[in-house]
Image 1: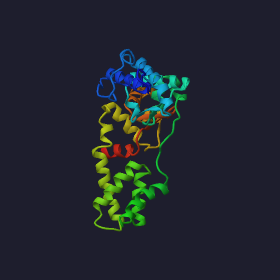
Image 2: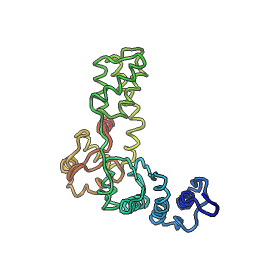
Image 3: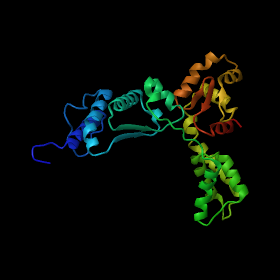
Image 4: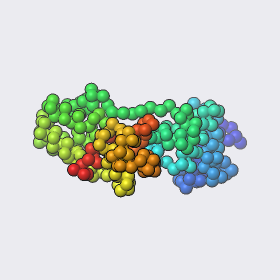
Length: 286
């Protein structure tokens, strides 16, 4: 590039530096000085739009894009969520190479739509559910086989049944098998001991982290839900079990959804956001 001309990508990255400072992240500058007057107003939605606009042309020239990846997206505060949605919406309209890629609990689409009504048509939503039986079996058997170990049929059946195809639980229970089994093959007895150890590990971290966020009234509601397992509960059934009119429980239901403990897959139904929560709740009262 000739003397006196400005590198457009370097200039655009100056906006990144400016924007990072408005977020209180002065270290995110890519080694370039902040660009005064762009993406530095302090208004998050406006600054993010300016940032994406400034990146548009130089990124296209280099054949690349800019993406923001967010895990547990339902936990973002409303202001930042609105800014991301607004920027993605404008980028879609103007063809800017900007993308928001988020992952979260099942209630995430509803939360996004509650922040910006157009969010329901802004994203390509994909549900990541449990593995099918063949894939779950492979997830346990193949790594064991590479290490010269294997499961008996009954041991494998017990672990697969307990994990219900969810990768995290396959990992937790599978790890417990290796911890408790004295040698290979892994037997039915090994599997039963591993399931006890795996549930104890879940009860010490995964499930209590959610249960502890619930108030006494919310726990009563969750306990009533647990009677239906993980299949979901009719809100009318919950009200009957708690001997209260459905409207009297609407606030509790809304709080559980806001806390990410439950979601509504369809009108009149409420479900746990994570699997095996019903089993955990039942163990608290057994």
